[in-house]
Image (cartoon, one colour):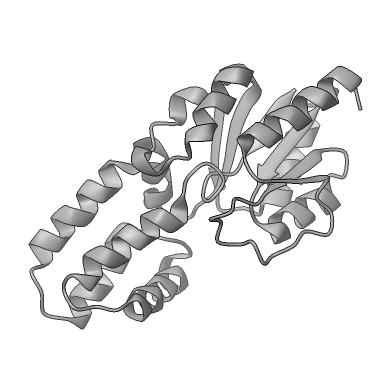
Length: 212
């Protein structure tokens, strides 16, 4: 058995982290819209969230104490573990490191740093941070794990559906936390839709016991 977990919004409360970043920039006169405008510009420039790029966009857009703001966001980034959903740790301890892997999209060093700062790395036997599509990764994963039951836990409907189309043999579980950012996005192909890792645990144990 191998359980592949997405990181952002699945393990990490990314919405809460983003909210704290917005508050830091609010404190020096920027709006939430300013933040998301710069976030989109960052994605256009480097393909994904990048702390240095988004910070430099703010620096070029306004007059504020850049050193003080940088210190605040660096402290926030260094303590990413406070944004990890509590139920992840119970789940990880229940199934053990050998059975857990992480699959996260990322094109910048910030994504790997965010994962490392979350203090979740020791709970995984494998961590994949990739710029390739998740369905492409799962084709490789399936070839390398023939004969094993493979589970995929993800919060984004489009990712669930693309992976399930590419590798229908896996069990795809969409996690829809009450505070999640993608509750309006509904999967057509998810095998299960759950609210937290405790529900994921029940499904996996049932699958293993019933060999279904």
